[in-house]
Image (cartoon, rainbow, N blue to C red; front, side):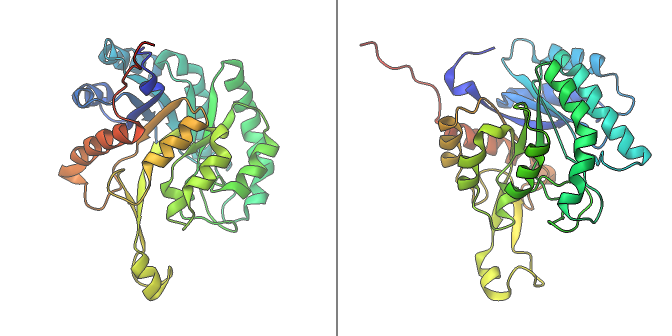
Length: 302
């Protein structure tokens, strides 16, 4: 692993671990300079052979200095359905096999009691995640809850409760372990008209993994018809094409001694998509590397 201090915050991307051949996908994009990869598994791992997948992927990464930063599962484990039980088991599976990938963080949604206020989900959240958190702690892993609202708010929703600080306070009071934190990205704050930098300063010690996704806010639309009119006022963007001040984000991450990865979450940009997907992602990769501080330069000898 490269000890270069610039790499103490790696820049990478997300890879669908359930696709037909994730190792082949990583092998194709690795030459672009990605330094880390988060493997995502949708709502459940299902019947995937995780040790075999790890072997294939690590063989591709061998000699590259790139790493698997984290593993992620994004279902709703707080329900009593067959799908929810599969999501719960997937958290446990990913924790059990994280070492095979060299990953130190498991990310995902908290889940939610559907269409009920967030506080009503906390007892079930605690019941479901207490054993998962204990399992992760025993293996030296961190749990990072994704901060996407999935279209929900304080009073209603169907996927996730980890939207923002008021919910985080409830979550971390219920599960106060040091290895329980956030998988954070500025986009989810911006599309709700929240300034991400003050939030980052306050919560940086609880952030274990970052999704590299940005947003564009059309302030003229807001001034003209507000946020509930016929026109869309905000867009998810690939980093470098939106309004996020990533240079200041990296400054705050370094000031907070964050050590981890910013992995680009693509497939959302309204312009750099389809045949331009990887074009946009590689632009974002190089842009984020510059915002991180560019290439490492050693200080002169005294």
